[in-house]
Amino acid sequence: MAATETLTAERILEATEEVLRRYGPAKATVVDVARVLGVSHGSVYRHFRTKAALREAVTERWLEGTITELRPHAEGTGPADERLTGWLTALFALKRNKAGGDPELMATFQVLIGENSAVVDRHVEHLVDQIARILADGVREGVFAAVEGEEVVTTARAVFDATDRFHDPAHAADWSAPDIETAFAAVVALILRSLRRA
Amino acid sequence: MAATETLTAERILEATEEVLRRYGPAKATVVDVARVLGVSHGSVYRHFRTKAALREAVTERWLEGTITELRPHAEGTGPADERLTGWLTALFALKRNKAGGDPELMATFQVLIGENSAVVDRHVEHLVDQIARILADGVREGVFAAVEGEEVVTTARAVFDATDRFHDPAHAADWSAPDIETAFAAVVALILRSLRRA
Image 1: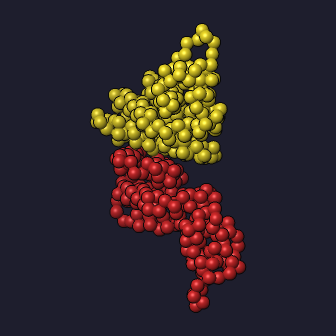
Image 2: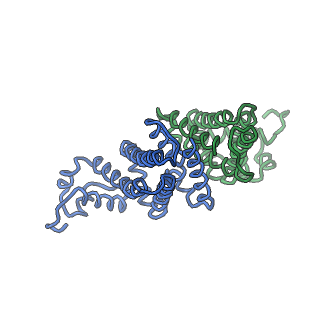
Image 3: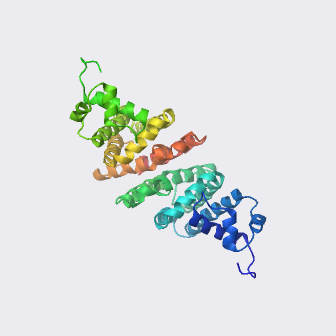
């Protein structure tokens, strides 16, 4: 690293992602990360106290990318039913692109995700919160039928679970099937009918 | 095998399941199956022309067990919404018991299922047909809102896909989570609201 550049947590995370991609999750070490950055491994440990903490932070950063990309749909201004369709479609597209675009990186993150279930649980909560926000807006607009306070989150979680086939990487192999778009549209239609007239 | 017993396809399939369970799908051979039955491997080949055909038939038999167990729900006489809930609950229970009861056999069948995608596709069609039957009855009873001819199958498939998290073995690891029953109930409620008032 050029001596003038400050070693930030963000730069370490970028380098770690690169090292994980290059060596795979089984072989990648903190020493590899330090070498890529041209610093001592002690410098890396000043930002992340353990290798596990570093891997957890990389996982979190990767998942946060999805939240950021979906935010415009969650916070948009159109009718809530269209926003929900847009959000679900965008999530499916993001996951498909990730799965299809760089299978090795995807396999790496599958390993990291398996190691960091608390991070994944928080991530799913964020996603469900985004759905809940759209639902609450839809109720206010009169687009969706009324649901009681607590129930918004339960229903949002049900929407997330019911579309599982279209965002859980466990189903990535199905995402190139010729009828997958039809199947997705049918599930979204089923969900919207439920929300509109519950 | 006792000389008086006839070598039926059914007996060969039972023996094959036993051999697969014992040796695993990578090592099990037709010779092993013949040995268990006390017959020559030529006798087995008279019923199943190839090892692949035998493995396919075992897969089919295994999956047909599910169809048979679900039939009372599909063909029952109660209100259609209760039948659908019963069918989905029974499918989830069957898959959970299979996954939890004999993990080795489950792993074996995961391999066979991967080898026999045409059999699996037909199986899913049978399951979707059972849902479609319940939906059609529900429309006739006035329990479910009207859906046009072709659309019954599309909607039935959407119901199957939307409950994927509760029957696809890819999710077996989640089935012992403490909140899985709540999640299942919320998805079923979402689906029923959709069907009742579409």
